[in-house]
Image 1 (cartoon, rainbow, N blue to C red):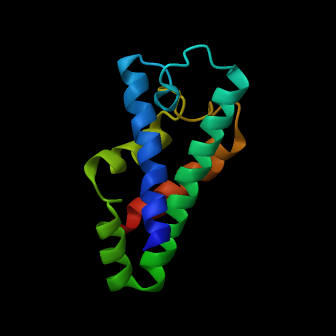
Image 2: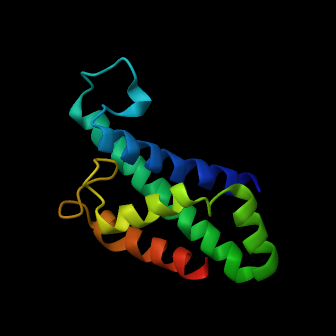
Length: 125
């Protein structure tokens, strides 16, 4: 349950970053620091990418290993909230459109691994 709570927080971080970028705000986690170094922003994008990927992998593994209990735990953790599911879909459909993840054309993990992890998770929802 603790790991799923962390997984939900990781997906939530992506959702919040996407939402904030859609509104045209700077990176939400850096309120007050609008002049952040680009390398720090890139690092945060990679961390969000990895968090999303691992969150989906964890939820998928749990739901496939213990189907009934796994589905209940994933739902209880909040990973099936529409806002978080939309963040997963947006991460695959347009990973860099909102600046929440690294650009797919420049990052192998965003292009190759995130879509597979998200697809496996969404296939079980």
